[in-house]
Length: 454
Ligand code: GDP
Ligand code: MG
Image (cartoon, rainbow, N blue to C red; front, top):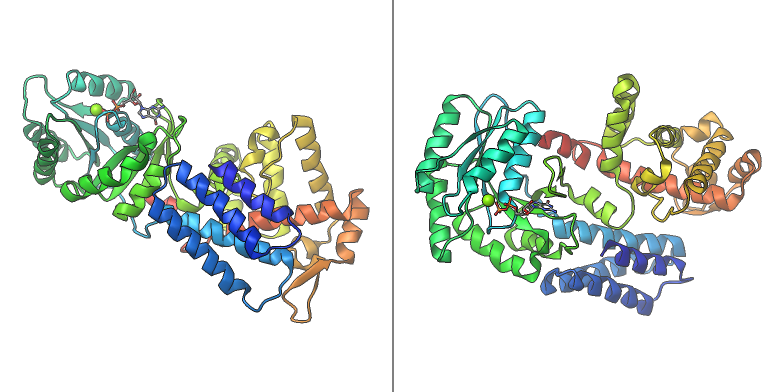
């Protein structure tokens, strides 16, 4: 999906000028890709209308430069895609020092039991005393499954081989763990009944018995167009406040899950990306879309850097401080590139870096490209390094609209033994990353949001 949308956007980039026909062709390609990935038809139609009107509004009367017009289109598409997975609702945030009861609901086979253990491990790692209550009495062997995976994960668990009423087990387990001062108490439910009505009734009763702080709908990424009806039905009887989409590692197209977000106005909080206990990723709209479009994976990059920088906490603090403030000079960018180069094979990380989407190639090729970018920054003055890159541009009379690169870019190209075109590309890549950093930073940025999310 991402590749096709990205392809449509690059086709637009390659075209000399944008006109309505080209815009329509691009929108058609993007919408077809979304539909084939099982995103709901109505959502796709409204995305198309909104992108078109955003682009119209932005370009009205403005004969701005072609590159900027393309930026407008790209940004409109990006923002609308983010909008699809961002209901603008804050999920519940577990608090330390008190019991937080989480309840997992969803049809059997969606990955509830697996996800419950992953969640317990996730929170345990972050200092929450965590446990699991198995309230699935429907499926034979359900308690054994919980027992095995919880034991493997070294997480406390509760269940019963003899009690057949899931409501009784849930109430007993949550009660016991509350008394024992557990902080994350996860209730796993069955997701299956002879009659759908019975299932929903069972969930309502368990919900009343344990009073969850957050009910989580666990959805299989491959659910397709059925996602909308299913999530609506669950929303009515088990008013969930968060969604976890599992099996994102498979061939699933994931579009159904997107439709579920829109249908229920509920945020996705995690993605399941495999069968192992550690295969759980926090979800945030912007980084997700950026990654999907091959526009870089800042979240992954930051996480990798955090791992690497454990040996050098001081430096890491600086990087994070800059990112949090949304400040991102060329010097910061160079710093990041340097870090990336120290992280191991660059080919492994290139795709995570905004602005370097298609940097496919051998390790040597990529590494030499990186080195050339570093040489360019070596040829810059302190003033240029501290800048946001605009000093490399000649401006329109308004002083805001860049027209072309100037003598500074020529000097850098000469000094580093590269070409002006390469310097322009480097500046473009810096800008992409700076834009992501700006979106990430600040009080309302997703970086803060994700840190608060725990
Ligand atoms: P439940 O019936 O909802 O409790 O589902 P389970 O937790 O028992 O999972 C059903 C199957 O899906 C199991 O074989 C899991 O290993 C598998 N599964 C769960 N989550 C993921 C995931 O994120 N990726 C993959 N590949 N498999 C998963
Ligand atoms: Mg289960």
